[in-house]
Length: 74
Image (cartoon, rainbow, N blue to C red; front, side):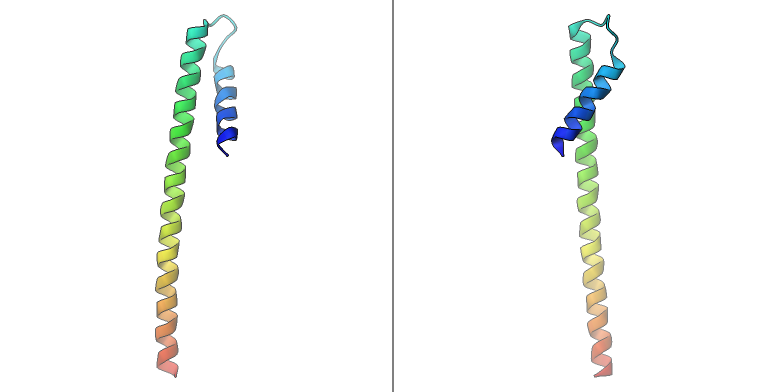
């Protein structure tokens, strides 16, 4: 996955630079694009992990409730 992110950042850099740009401008644009893309990836990964944690918590609550209901009918 990280390779795809870096490729995307590289392509975004190419699309935002013109042929007349200096190497320094291209390098700065590439650095900004890569940093931004990596930050977005990290934020998304953290949100996914939080969601997984929330789902696990909800699953545990449902399992407990199911067990409680089963005890009532035993």
